[in-house]
Structures are given as structure tokens and as C-alpha cells.
Image 1: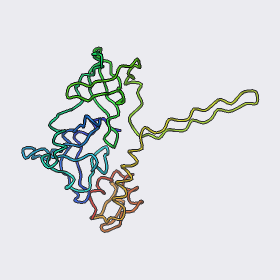
Image 2: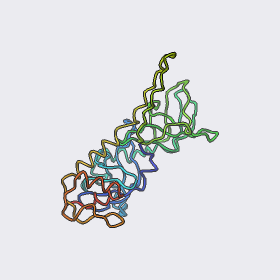
Image 3: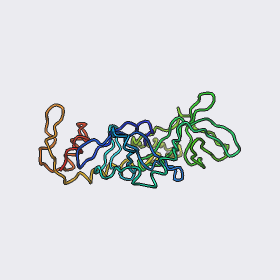
Image 4: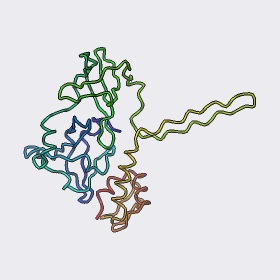
Length: 256
């Protein structure tokens, strides 16, 4: 999962062309679906019109870049009427007031979190006292341009300081306690499942795209060890070496 702030400003890389197409300027929200439908891309030619990348076309959404198959995945907003409507609706989520159906103000949104399918999973809400809490998207009835409407409930928002980390760190199984002859065994609580498997799906999609391709140039580690020669086949081993050496984006941009 990623906060919206972690996506803004990321370079968008075309794998097949090996070039940067621009940087993420904005996230286009689909309020009806409660998701990010597309990324608005700034390629330095904003005066020619906004360029949009459908979220479904993303191959990889990493820490340093957004990777896509080719520049054909990016189009002018005028070429996609549905995304154009969402862009002009300007539902940004951040800055919106959070209101219950009865009219109580819970605070305002200062950040939102999306999974790697684009679904908004939670919002960070700051109340009048400056306390920040997590609002699960399941409680949101309406994503409006300036207001989020939530259902009435006695369940309090979860304080941001105690909310689960939004990452994909594997859960370490809890070992069962020792059982003595004079005591009943203590039930072992099953570890919570990973927050989402969408990160793995993205990684698999990106990996399958690269496998079997040829490297357009030699890729080396920072200390000169060869990851793959020019013309060499991209294999699982090559991909793992590139990831360990921090050269995965460079590898992705160097295929033919």
C-alpha cells in the first residue's frame, strides 16, 4: 500500500522504450468506486493538455518509479472521455471535511492510502485538536469534491500512532508456547494475514513481462560485477541480481 504523497513526483518509465515519460503530477480519483482511476503525468508540456495513465496499465509501482509497458499507455485526457470527466470533477480527497450523516464534523483528510490496484483503503483524518486517526474506506458513504460522508457508528477512529503499518512486511509466525503436563495448552493466535497480495501481483506481472527479453546493454553493479551482458536473456537469476543491486529500474529500462 502507498500514501498518495509517496506516488506524487515519481518518474513514469516506459520499459520497452527505456525512457522517462514524465512525473506523476496528480492522482485522478473515481469517487463512485472509491479508487484512483488514473495518474496525471507532467511531461513538461502541460500546456498541450493533461496526459493520463490508467491505473490498470501500471506494471510496477515502486519506491523510485512507476513502470509501464510503453508510451502508448499514456494518452491525452481528451482521448479518454471517462477519465476526462473524473479529472474535471476534481475530487482530490485531501483537504475534504469528514462529515457524518447526522452532520457531525470528524475532521479533515490530510492523506489517503491506496493499495496497488488503486483502491483507497483508508484516509488519515485530523480532528480539531490536531489528533490524526485512520478512517477505513469501508465507513465512507460518499467521496465528494469537498466533503466525505461517513456512516454513523459508535466505533471510534483508530489513532494513527497505533494503526498497522501500511507495508507488505511478512508476518512472522508466533511460536506456540511450551505445554506442561499439569497445564492445558494455551491456544495460539493465528498471525494476521498480510495486508494485501496486490504487491506480489504487481511484482509477478512485472517479472513475467521481463522474462525472456534481451538486455539492450550491459548492466553492472556499482562495484563492477556483471548482472547481464548486452544481448543477454533476462532470467529469474538476472532479475534477482538486479533487485539485490538496486538496478531493477535500470534493467527494466534496458530491454529489447
